[in-house]
Image (cartoon, rainbow, N blue to C red):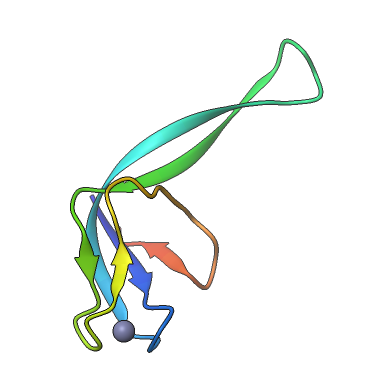
Length: 72
Ligand SMILES: [Zn+2]
């Protein structure tokens, strides 16, 4: 899937290819687990405008408003 990600250096919005994953997380309730959606870049992505690296395959992206948005 495609993810729109804002370059932290220049603010340009880039489109990157990602896999969606769910990371299991413990909650205060022992029998309840939360799943947090995370996005794994398929390759190292650089900003099209300033060429700085914005995503790497081993660094999962957690969706935070203002930093990234999903392209539907
Ligand atoms: Zn940039």
